[in-house]
Length: 112
Image (cartoon, rainbow, N blue to C red; front, top):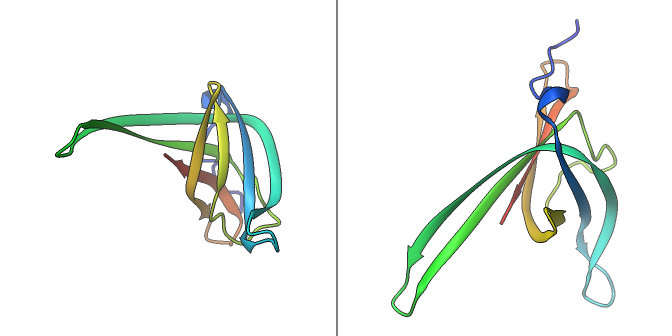
């Protein structure tokens, strides 16, 4: 059975460059690059203002949605960096949304 794709190609219009890391660190204490990805995604972002005792802080969170599995070599996406609209963002987590047969329908990457 073929399952419908929940992220349509027609809505993936934003260019993004991802660097995904392996879990763990290298001998030098730096993250180990697993995959470099460049392509298009559906990008959604939001901002909220947090008032601290010292100053006002604006926190931006974002999600990028991709068709299928962008990192089939990785069981989980646990971290990395993304460059979008010329800004570098840190990847907090990734989600591989699976179909009932176990194939990946879409991948979501959460960033700050």
